[in-house]
Amino acid sequence: MKLVTAIISSHKLDEAREALLDIGATGLTVSRILGDGFERHGPRTDDCLLKLEILAAERLADTVVASIIGILGTEAADDARILVFEPEQAVRIRTLEIGDEAIG
Image (cartoon, rainbow, N blue to C red; front, side):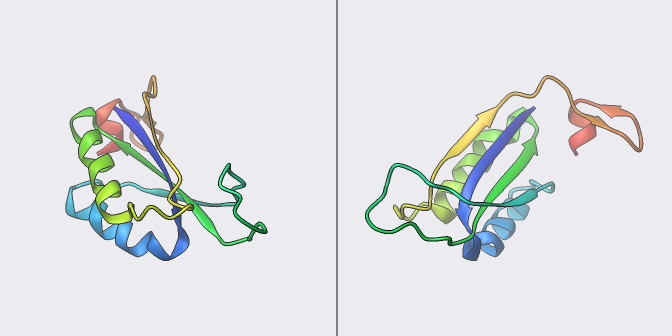
């Protein structure tokens, strides 16, 4: 399993959600964040950025990344990063399912 994390502009959330549903990625966590990166071309703004976290089966992770790039890659400064991590374990608390069964 992989944890795909992406930083996007808040106005792109609906597009991202649709694209992820289209490829079968059904779980999504969204957090509001503030960023202050290296691209400082003027005064800092407090535009709302979102952090998306998608826990996906390993076979789906590359498709999730490609989908996010395809929809959100605009070369804008706030299209910041996509990071992919490998969690050691996932447990669905309600059913005690473990691993890929816990994220499906």
